[in-house]
Amino acid sequence: MPKNNQGQPRHSKRWLIMTAVFIATFMTSVEVTIVTTALPSIISELHGLAYQSWIMSAYLLTTAITTPIYGKLADTIGRKKVFLWGVIMFTLGSLFSGLATNIYMLIAMRALQGIGSGAVLPLTFTIIADNYSFEERARVLAFNNTAWGLSALIGPALGGFLVDALSWHWVFFVNVPLGVIVAVLIWGSYHEKLRATERLVIDWQGISYLAITMVGILLAVQSLDSNLVVTGVLAVVAAISLILLVRTEKRVANPLISPKLFRNPSFSIQISTTAMLSGILMAYQIYFPIWLQSIYRMPATMAGLVVSSSSIMWLIAAFFVGAVISRFVPKYVAMGVAILLVIFYTILVFAGRDFPSWMFYLIAAVNGGTIGIIISMNTILSQHFVDESMIGSATSLLTLGQSLGQTIMTGVFGAVLNLMIATHRGNLPLAEINRSISSNQAGATANKAAVDTVILHGMHGVFAVVIGLLVAVFIVNLVDPNKKVVR
Image 1 (cartoon, one colour):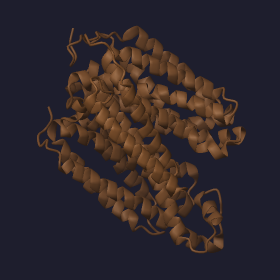
Image 2 (cartoon, helix red, strand yellow):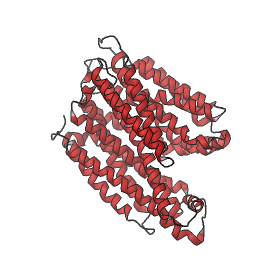
Image 3 (cartoon, helix red, strand yellow):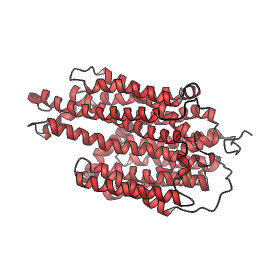
Image 4 (spheres, one colour):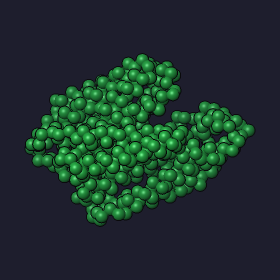
């Protein structure tokens, strides 16, 4: 029987394991798109407008905090136990979110979902690494990435159908049978031979400092555009906690995040690149539809297709990752992509009201194709650059980087948009600008040109930040010491 990288025999029923991994990936990724569609109905029925941001933030927060913890546990007690725990917690969180009778219960159950997601998301990649060789992983990851594409394509439509035909509760209930199927498949088909390890020692200090750091960062981002004093205090708390976390991990015998992971600078570069590119994803996925609806008065459905073009190209590009890795030096691929995207976003920064709408679909497609290749490449390389005994921890850190990049940059982009609008709106009422953001509202016809100009200033500010991120991606990869094709 063929063996994996850890010397363990590969299971003959890998197709069953991959089926479970595929469903788990779809289940956790569709959660974001499907819940976003149902948010207006949820807020209205539960009278939760004041707490609406926490419906998403509670999920992201617990996912971010638990991801590296599960990575460490997976390397110590095995993938199967941790993965099953995550699937069960996610499924229970989905069930009780659907049963929520008030906003507070919903937020708590969304946090429970995140506790499960923190295990499921990174371990799907780890299980692939355990069962497929380095040469095979690009192909298998390309197949698994189709689950992300499917979720982006059908999630909004499915969420809208469930809300209209049944109720918002069903956007959570729909994941329950999927979770049961994943748990049964993994329980029956995934058999791993655990390595002999020392007694498990929980790094409670590391966990505490990590939690404080993550909570501080995410709360600081949440308050970025409303209270800068609170943001500053939270940022200082997060920074101090991060310093204490680094010191603790260097000192303890069994650290939560092993400093050994960062001995290879190329590993750190994969994490940093993924975090920044994940943040860029949020820029065009959120603000392209807003631009198209507010300036061009394009219907929401048509504007939403701009994200679909990105998802389709991401899926297609994923099948070329193996060829790219086997032929090109990773740093040069990332640097080339950064230069290409800088050109497109520079055009956007200077775009006016008559900028052709079809260009948004083209730029989104280029983003999906290029960033899809780089992030898939980052995943494979981050596993390759560390010791086999730490693949779970490495993959969890990559997933944490993605979550933090998306969460932090979403807050930053929102703050920049608000700041630019406040700076340029002059005597225009903010309520009038708010009305004009949606294609469903006619806005104030007499002031449409002025309102469009203000909104354009906001968009230009957002995409100027994206250019800054792309420059950072270029510089980070420029200093990557690896100048050879990775084999």
